[in-house]
Length: 53
Image (cartoon, rainbow, N blue to C red; front, side, top):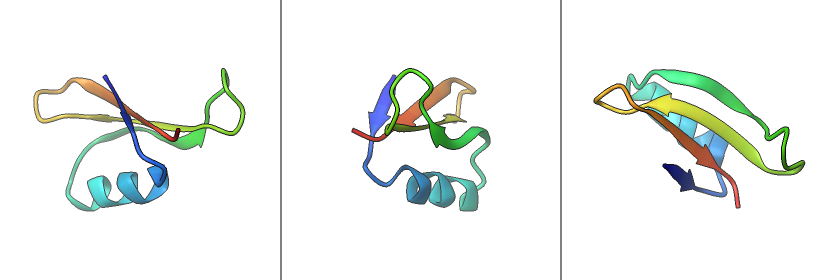
């Protein structure tokens, strides 16, 4: 599942502050320059992606 949010850095910071495991810090997507992506684990341990539009 990919969540879309224009403020990826802010969302990851809020998740991190809440104790969520961040798998990949926000970075530019290698497959789409200008798009920011990051990964975190949900409460069941699944990897989730958050990306800018």
